Length: 153
Ligand code: ADP
Ligand code: MG
Picture 1 (cartoon, rainbow, N blue to C red):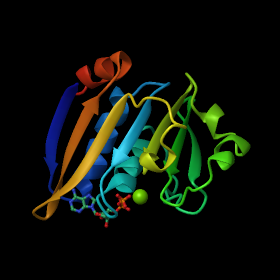
Picture 2 (picture 1 turned 120 degrees about the vertical axis):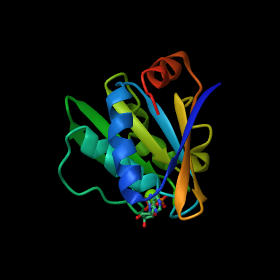
Picture 3 (picture 1 turned 180 degrees about the horizontal axis):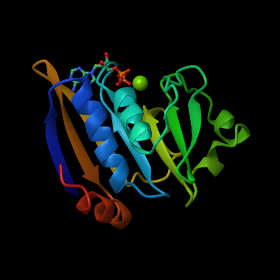
Picture 4 (picture 1 turned 90 degrees about the vertical axis):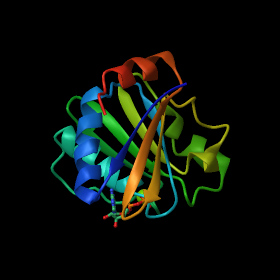
C-alpha cells in the first residue's frame, strides 16, 4: 500500500495538516483514524472540518457514536466507536446508509465494528513522538491512492 508520513510538533500542526488533508479528500471516502486515547484523532478531524469551512464546534461523539456535519456540499460523519457494542444497533441506527458516494466517513476505533464497515480508503495513524505526534497515512484502495497522490505532505 502507498504511505506518507510526517511529524506534527503541536496541536496547531495537527489542525493545519487536517486542513491540508481536507483539500485532497473526496466524497465517498472512508477513513479509519487509529491511535490511543489522546493521540489526536479528534483534533485531526477538527482540522479537516475547519479546512472544509465548518466554523462550529467539533466535539467527540463518544456517547452518540457519530456526529454528522453538512459542509461544502457533502456530509461528513465523524464516528467514535469506542463504546460501540451491539451490531444490531448499526443497522437500526441506519449507520450503513452513511457510507455512500456523497459522504465522507471518519472513524475512530473502527475495530469495534469490524465486519460492519467497508474497506477503508485510508488508514491514518497518530503516534506520540517526543512532545508531538507522528502521522502516517496509508492508502488501501485505488480511490484512496489517487487522493493520497494529490497530497504533498
Ligand atoms: P483522540 O481523539 O485521539 O483521543 P484528541 O484529539 O481528543 O485525541 O486529543 C489529543 C490531545 O493531544 C489534545 O489535548 C491535543 O491538544 C493534543 N495534540 C494534538 N495534536 C498534537 C501534536 N501534534 N502534538 C502534541 N499534542 C497534540
Ligand atoms: Mg477522539
